Amino acid sequence: MPILNYTTQIAASKSIGEIQKKLSKAGASAVMIEYGPSGEESALSFRFAVDGSDVYFKLPANTDAIYNVLQRQCAPRYATRKQAANVAWRILKDWVEAQLAVREAGLVDLIEVFLPYAQTGMGGKTVYQLFKDKGFKGLKQLEHHA
Image (cartoon, rainbow, N blue to C red; front, side):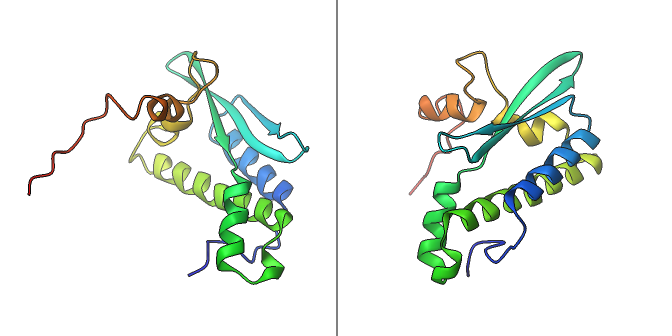
């Protein structure tokens, strides 16, 4: 089964705008687009006030990974860099929309859904990146019994 949204004709910029609008409606006090070396949109950074303090988040769009998947799974007409950007941002739009719906339903709070993307004081790395760099030490490991 091909990757979600692989046939989208919605431009990355439109999906990014939709994400910005959803984050703003959810209470974000700032949303910023980050750009990669060749000028493509590479991430969204945003800020929410949580318990009186600003918490910063960075949501990356790994278009290289999407491009590789499109090359493996889809017809050549879909396996382009432009389509990879369109697909990546559409998937992120859907994901943000779902996370905000779960929050709105009262099932979780904002930090729970975006915690992996929270930026730390450690060179701007996200919580996920810090755990990954440490081999996920500090997370409970389940023991496997044979």
